[in-house]
Each structure stands twice: as structure tokens, then as C-alpha cells.
Length: 136
Image 1 (cartoon, rainbow, N blue to C red):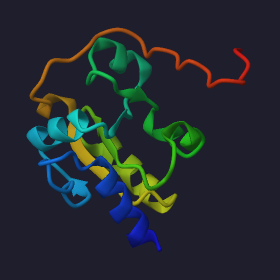
Image 2: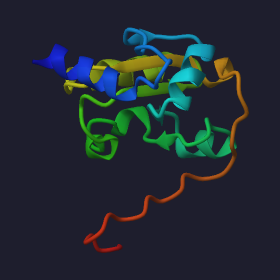
Image 3: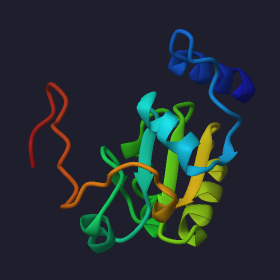
């Protein structure tokens, strides 16, 4: 069943002519940029201060040691997640944790320094509440 869910998630993100997503695991910066362009959730597992200094556009910031506690912020477990940190150590720990928690399509491009595109600066933006949810 898990394999089927991963296959369905891959098909849902496959753009016409884009082909299937690569197999989950460690990917290079160019592959990471293609995954981001196709709508994969990008997860920065560095500290908020590191995130503010520069991050992949559209990335969500959840420090690696908070991933398990904040897992609901990532959505369904069959949705692909692309993660990174500064050197690859924390992203590797977070990738293992996501797999342990049932995520089936985890991509790790390890280091922000491998990102081939521009980076954004500033704090994480608060997500808008869904309809019917109260604002804090």
C-alpha cells in the first residue's frame, strides 16, 4: 500500500511532458530546483536565524529537531518533501525521521550552498488559516 501511495503522489506531480519524479533519496541542486518548480514541498531544517539569512523561495522552516512534533504542517505523508540544511547533517537526520514517520517520497539535497537558483531573505511567512479555522 505504501508503494502505491508513493506512485500516486509521483503521478500527481508529474507535469505533462515532465515525466515521473526521480526516486526518493539524495539529489543534486539541479534536480532539487526541478522538484521545487513542480510543486514539491521544500523544507528547510535549519534554525530560524539561518532561514532568515537566506532560504529557497517558498520553503517552510521547521528545525530538524522539531520535525516530529510539527509533522502535521507537511500535509499528507504521500506528498513529496524536499529538504536541506547548511551541510547535510541535519537534513539527513530529518530525512530519516520523515521516513520513520511514514513519508514515502523524501528528497534531500543536503546543503543550501548546492541550490543553483536565487534565495530569499527574511523570516518565514505565517500560513493563512484554512476556511473555518480561527486565527491565533
